[in-house]
Length: 140
Image 1: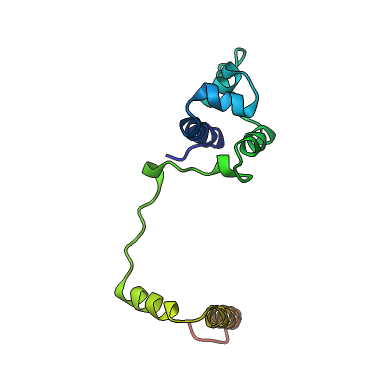
Image 2: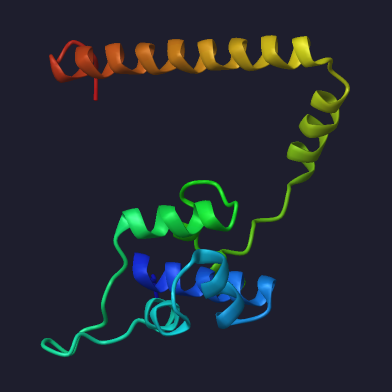
């Protein structure tokens, strides 16, 4: 199940707490009361609606700045159990990676540029063929 942005931010705030020794230390670094920090971190419920309060983007950026994190750090889901298991590398992919590893930085850049140009040319050719096919000039 996908987390919403507030759940992700709360989870990352817990990570910050762990890094600095708890909620009190985190609140001190941010410059707020421990109760305000905990309300954000735990997603305190709005007394009128009963729904958990969200965190404004500006508040998230301010927290990141106080902890020396890059902008957007709080918005990245770091919960390992939710990450997709990477697919295994095939033998063909391994051979390609080994060959690329032998190239210089300039050669890699040139190879990448050439591959991108080839892909673009192929996509343009396919688009042209589809257009001709739609006009009925090519057999099904």
